[in-house]
Length: 328
Image (cartoon, rainbow, N blue to C red; front, side, top):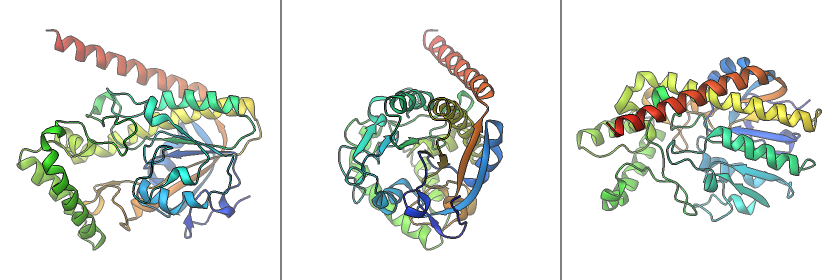
């Protein structure tokens, strides 16, 4: 059995950690939340590890170059991992011979993300057709936007072959501002690395005072519900994606009963700890770097499907209510 250390930098493509058949990546998944919530749908062996990265860009730069399996299939709901072009030093296509750009054709404009149920169906279809290949399935959840109707926020636009994605709320009015804002955000990231953890949160409050649109889904969420509700919304996103993972695992087990399935994350997430939100690059906060490594034994697929059916019914009711209000 692989010895997953809780102190060494973990990357699932390092030679000592790469003995898996199927790798499931939950984007921005914290260890502490996963440790509690996975028990509803999954059983297996859980380890806490220290991620090499605090954001997907760093994951692509620091981790993907270690991949040595040229026959591997990477199903990506995250536009940073794409087969189109490099984003800065993030050159996923240079390290993966086959990337399925799920972010490009499964994007849901209403949710502003790739729905996890759609990614599950796509992954199962690909795995069925390529039973002897190792596969990575990269979900976007629990990363914002939060897709439970109780905490619905505005998500991202799908910019097709021009990742990364841009936040959608009236940003076209602020094109000139964006170039300035990028420089401001780079400076804030430096401040956070130096220990000024609340710099980003303070900047969001200034933007709101100036009447600027929300910077991203987390900013939109805080304006609507307050930062104290973000823990519940994040947990809901995580439960939805874990239920989908349980359904995927059940399908894989039917095809390959003895396959080794590992669940992990590219990085963690800050939910207000030390004044930090989301997952800024290069910041050393435990909640950003502690991620799960879970070796799957079994999945409670019946309970998972019941949970997902309830979620889908809630989404349909939410859409119906929203449409009814528009036509009054």
